Image (cartoon, rainbow, N blue to C red):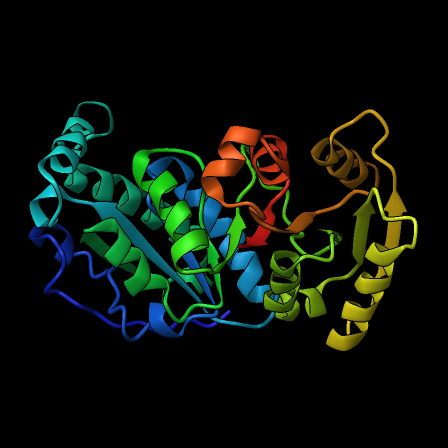
Length: 299
């Protein structure tokens, strides 16, 4: 994993400049293969661990960035400003949230000598703009889907506005070996194909790939299209079809992943769009709520 250091003092709070831990977005995050996006202090270390593994798996570069909404630097409706200011009572001020992420980053960085050159970028203000600025050129963004308001909003922007390939850290502990066995939940839909194509670099580095077709059509079209896509991308993998029986598709995928000792799931996210998925409780929502594994996805 390679990291290129640089500094940008203009955007950093004075008390944190002396630490010289911050990076110039144009020098680091812009050109990184993997970006650990750190909107929530609670998941910062976990995101960093997963991002490090994802970068090393492809012999790529890693960067880290904090993003956060800051009402003092936002152009928004008064109601939105008021909502953001109310967060301070539960989550602390934007400055305090940055300081907690910074401490988590510093503690993580100092655990291994080869992390010393990795710097942290910071972007606060309008969250949509910050996400775009930090992630625009990055191939894979590691970001939590749950947590504080910044985490939830950033995740939505990554998928639906930036259309990024996103790697969601697992809840709780991360066992490592990210690409030991990647299970792909497959249906021949555009969003699923986009996810597999975008993840090709990481799938090539995987020790094992299994494409899982749940409730295939009688003509076997799920399996046929899966094999064709693997062939087109030059990937070796098994294609397996199973019936969900009385379970949901999400439960079926997770049961299979557990039985086969999967280390990562890859899916096309939110076929029907975010808000309809929230109402209907479809597969993506179920997996994000219940999967114990890292999940790679793209809308």
